[in-house]
Length: 376
Image 1 (cartoon, one colour):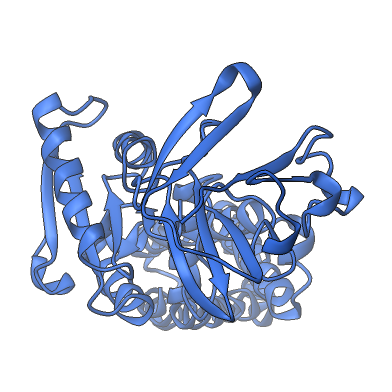
Image 2: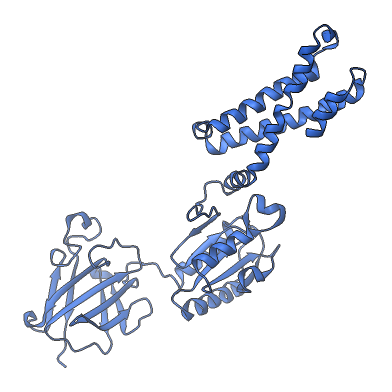
């Protein structure tokens, strides 16, 4: 449009055909800028967009230049030779659109952000620490995102270099990417060749063979280091990604509680030192027996420690139970001198954290812990 304005201003009044073509092209460009403004208002909201003075000026320039272009294109100004200054003013006013062009060029990144937000619709975006990505943490170790793109697709999807920068910043040397797209891939060097490809067609489910291979790979990666995470994506980060994330939540890697105590981890501390620890999800150092009839769970310690004197028992949970004191859902102290008949019962009110009434919507009236002992 810079060229169009300069050519238009330099033409004589006799160049009618050329001028008409220039006016048509200029009109198309003006409408393009109007649509751009309307899309920004739609995505950001009317109040938010026009809270910026620069945006107000920008919108005024677009509207004024569009009106002037329409007047210049559709009005007969042949008789305006009597007032040449008016015609010159109308032509020169179109120079204002140059301001719009330079502003649009300077806001390339902002335009890309707006476009990506429209494509991601109502999905959660990661907008912290200088990142703005169609990406979210499903759990602390499972990340869901849309396709890491390059070229033109990076305008409205996650730019692959930004995704790599995010993962290298947050989980350096401890992440693996799972690409569930059968239709396209990318150079794995962006993610240091830690990329696994599972071929799943769009709007389809994976084969059982592929799902077993995927879960086995994830379990092996997660077990290698407690800091390891996985980043899962398909194209839009919805159907196929959701299936893969759900399978790992249901499976071993990030087991969610089902009321059977599998989310618990028990720590026994004697004389300020960790004497024993068991993980119920993996049945590590313990055996777990759900007692659904009594709304209880029995945790049988394997090779439990010999305790004497003051003992602290802490219960941690991966179920998202609210944490209180000691950064855990509940804990308690006892002294072995108070144990009678190898049994000790603590009610809800005697457990630290559940003793508070604000937690009673989670810990019901019959909640408690019973300790059973055997002689060494």
